[in-house]
Image (cartoon, rainbow, N blue to C red):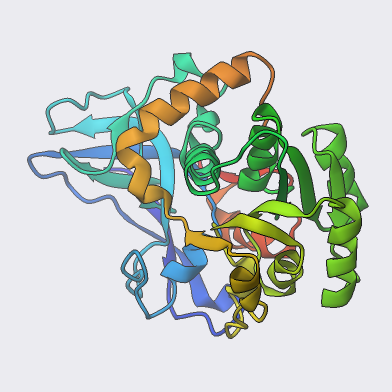
Length: 336
């Protein structure tokens, strides 16, 4: 059996993860039991949600046990199989880990995929994977957009946020994005078609509130929130009557003590509502969402950037890009 490099979680991060929280080890690949198959992982998705899985407290998924490899969605090729329906050479996608080889189980989360149906097999981790489905169902089902409304997207240069802005335009809305730095803001308007972009860097809550008001003179009907903190509080101060807030993420709080929402009272004043989003709720409808996203992509109405770093030995640095904001698009690690 081949040797297996594994990126292990060795201790719980205290705030921002540091290199010493992890260890790259080499271990023998386990022998397969009946009903199992061996996956050679080629690409892994790196997502902010992984930070929450590293804490001792469980959330919507149990914490990663110490000494286990860091959990991640991967795509790869079946190398050996003792499971019906999974043949050597077959491409698969599933929730596995940051490691060269993962063991899949028939009837589990890992499912076959067809690389011939997409421009790049990595698209199964971006526009046709959890990222695309988060944008599709989160925006259309939770936010209920209507033509002519103004949609405010935080983390708008990220993988999910950039798609939400494009979906807003497809549905006849005005899209305003918040991102960090002039380069990302330019990409929002020039590449993704946002109507306006706001650079949050160097702005306190009052300045952000004023910047949103200037970019959204008719107020905000929908907030698609990925960041939280003062960005969300500034957005709440610009809500229209009966507006909707889709809460997808709070990346500003993942490595710190929770700040909380301080302008929550605006939901009362504006008779607005806020709903949390977990894309796992929509897994049974992924085929529906992927089909529609595929139509829009084929029409040239959707585009997504993929930032691909190479090498399992670079897993820590690549993961930390998500919190430094130095990735340009969906963060993917090439393992093989």
